Image (cartoon, rainbow, N blue to C red; front, side):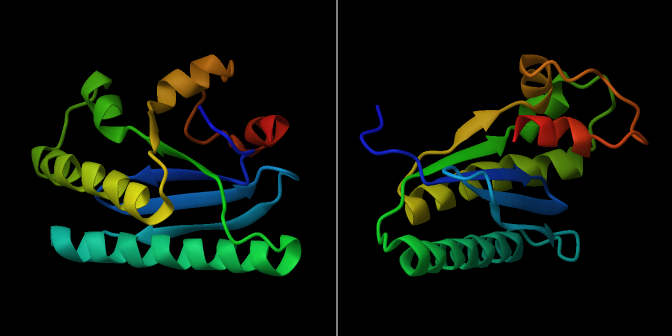
Length: 154
């Protein structure tokens, strides 16, 4: 059980081509940092991991500095959620690209561990379709924007 109130909610979406992240201030719901890192430029697992690690360090520094300046907090309580893309792909009715799946199978647990080491918090792993059904999001066409539905819950 958590002893302290949450300060930051960090959502991560990782696959072998991109690393997306959003950090939200839990107290006021403001987005503190978000971005998308293109991992498709390299096929090397270690280069991908170095890129994700540098990004996580930058996010941690940015947010820690923000809280030090605005709220004089040096120790933050994080909640980290990672999309479990591996389970999502296995459940999918679409064919799996073996090369992509193999890279993801190596990358995903290491990124999860990087979060644990850097932020002292174990990431929670979620399957996107489970989250959509939990919040009552209907299946949608790819062309339909989901922004308005997501912002209703933020």
